[in-house]
Length: 165
Image (cartoon, rainbow, N blue to C red):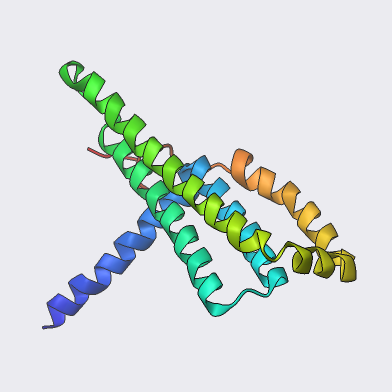
């Protein structure tokens, strides 16, 4: 019984390690995280209902989850033997296409939900200009987080410096 619980707990550790690796090594994952933060701010300003929050939350988690799956596929087929190079490239392209489709779907949902509350968002920004300034200033660290953040290991390496097999 104890070993089952321990194995179950280790699953969460492995999942957290995967998310941490994506944050450290995947620029697109970092972009989606930053975009999600801006969407959450817009949702607070829009004063969304619980159902609207649920839809936005599902979209955010779907995009982040799909980005993790895309990264996993890229890693799994990164260095195929010469007889499989075409199918590996096609698999990577399909996984990237899946991210694009889910992200576009999330944008459509966001446009419908937040578009319906645009006047509320604009009124909140006019009443509290500090929020606008903070959101604009947050673009600077977001840029550095997305494009200049470097991990201590390279893609395909573990924290022990050995390449993944």
